[in-house]
Image 1 (cartoon, rainbow, N blue to C red):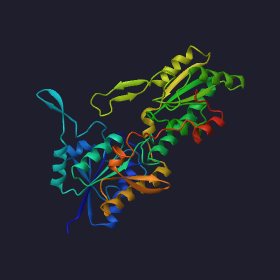
Image 2: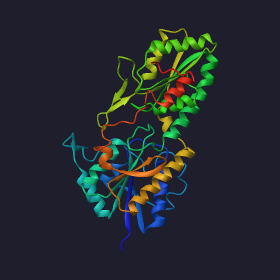
Image 3: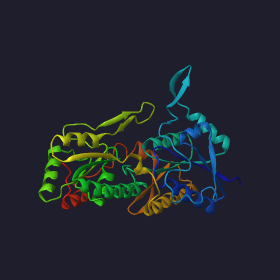
Image 4: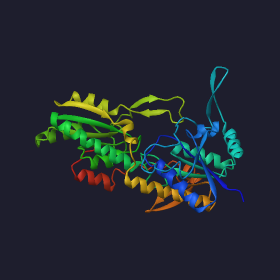
Length: 367
């Protein structure tokens, strides 16, 4: 009987834990079945160009703790609407059949896809074309539906909390107000949890539109108590009451062209007109994605990897591994993309326990 050939790709933005998933998937498959593994480079782009590397016990040794992805990644390559140059013009075409033929040529039996909404949507579409697909959810924003926690989130929370601690000392030394912008897009999980852990005074998240007057009140309340500095953490997609999210730029060749950014600088500029403090802003940016993977995320990631291997051995294709009620489970990609989970975003509950806990600590949300 021929070996089962398994291909892996990582798409979208990188996240701590991707390498740990690859590490665990490789080992679990190798130990429990007669198989060969390859990894397509740069996500779906590698699948289109048939650019891959072998995944062996040796090639994946020592990657468990490392952030990033040894397979590299891309968040612009949708093979169902792929940008090609023809006669000097950029046109969009469905080149997914070329990808399917590449897999057939290499004898690929199973495609394992690690990614977020866009990457998993394409995974669902490949499953519809008859490809045996297993999906694994990934995002540091922790906003993917059908799974309670994604790997990479805990690492990002730790990174932000550590940097808030560093900013805390310099901000206090100069009696400044520091506005710190973090990732998360339209979900405030990263700002909320890192803000609590990092002793923020104000947390502004998309789920709770803020009033700048309430932020000013908090600054002066702290002044009255002899605390002449304030730390404000804001999600990149936060919205002022009656306003809209601040768009940093549009990326035309991306499936999701909107890039939030600049909200911290805007808030800092607005606050300068309202308080006597010196105001500074800081966007942590891709620092939040970098460095080693946290211990929690390493364990969660290997659980995802082994669970994906279990689905492969059981031939339960067309599904995404998920984490629910403290255990690994799975849900169909159809439900994730267009079924029971469609249209549902996993956002912070403005009246939930974590928001209440933060408020009881004295943290203001600007509401």
